[in-house]
Length: 56
Image (cartoon, rainbow, N blue to C red; front, side):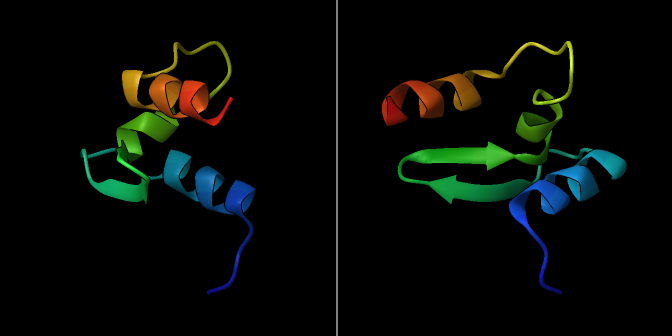
């Protein structure tokens, strides 16, 4: 199934988070629970913040 990154994140949000690794970006493992923190009004997880800081 081909979908955009945004569509994949929406799919992850619709599923129950179980702590499964969804992506590895460099040294950072991003879990399904990491993507939950990208919803409105949520605090970013440590792994998401570290990835964002690394990319700046």
